[in-house]
Image (cartoon, rainbow, N blue to C red; front, side):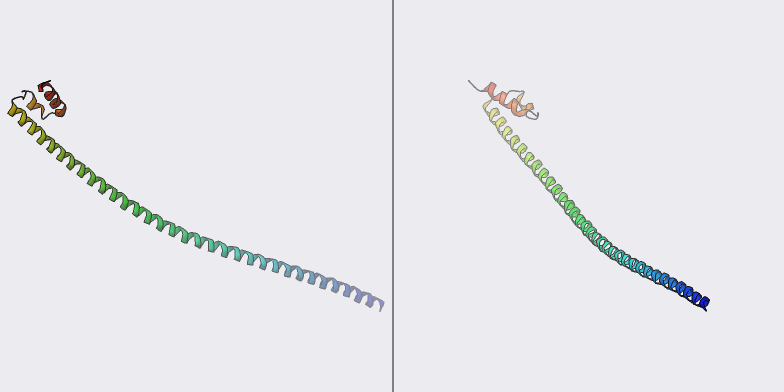
Length: 148
């Protein structure tokens, strides 16, 4: 009977050891499961945060591209306006230059007519009217023909 008691005691000890081992394993498994669940939750939160940041970045990027497109269009339009204004100013300047040249031609013609009427035109004066430096030659002609 003592042998049976020893066997029962040993059997009980073994069962207790097995139960302790199972309980420890279950506790560890539970802790591991909690840790994995917590890490999974953290990963989900991080993924959500990154997804939101990416979405915001994409929206901002689209907005920036749209703004850049608008700015570029405005710059192109401004450049066209400036070019048109430059062309207009060039045309106006050329027209004014032509008007000035026409008026100068009239003035020179009148002066020639006056000089001719007064008989003081030098033979080299008339051809000089068509030269680029006609004003200077005209002044020289007047200086040389005026008394004094």
